[in-house]
Length: 315
Image (cartoon, rainbow, N blue to C red):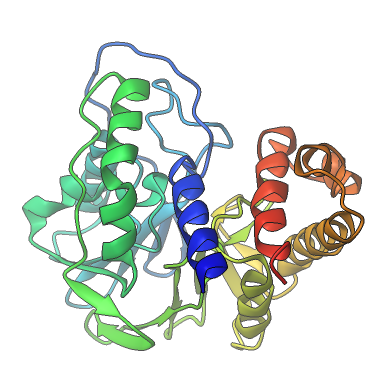
């Protein structure tokens, strides 16, 4: 029990240093941004593609794929963006598409590039939907994330907004003749991941359970992530919106790369632990066969190895 408690605390604190993307520090004066560009990937599903960068003042933490689903009666935002300004740009873009009420804001997990835009959506008085573990994760990390973003962005990044509707297993929200099925996952990318399936089109909105081209960021449970990806591949969806990468990909075909990477991370980290390779050396050597296959690999793979090592050394 003592080992398990120590490991959980160490992962929580270490994870708190993860902005999903490790920051580049740059400050400048804030300026209002235009409405973000939304791409319609299927009827009523509109996605903003995030830039493949670390968070900087120049990109305003607009680094994740975010967007909305429009039904007959209402709108659901699928992740509100990475800062107050990013969230407001998303809100303005939605208002250019429809005057229907923004009834729901789904917050897929704790990382700031996906949730810190929530403050801009409060004026719409939506229900904020999150995993049952999201309030605890925000309580543990929210102030740290907010202070870090303030230093990077050079302006108020927005408040820490807690979910008002919690998902423990599955739930459905109805946008008016359009139902979204929301699933709360076991620890995977983080310990509070949600995925969404639009039943009208069958499209899986996978958030950061799926990375494409950009190297995955491990902040939850490595073996669990592989397990949750296997479960998602059995959903019957034929297309997916990843949390980072193209706005729409074939599914489950697009899972092949992330499964390969996570499997290499698991296998080689286990081997390093078994061989008593020091953790710092493992961070330099594990999964190097994947190096040319992912963007930002050198920024994130060493950290992924450290997180995996801390988990697997207790097997």
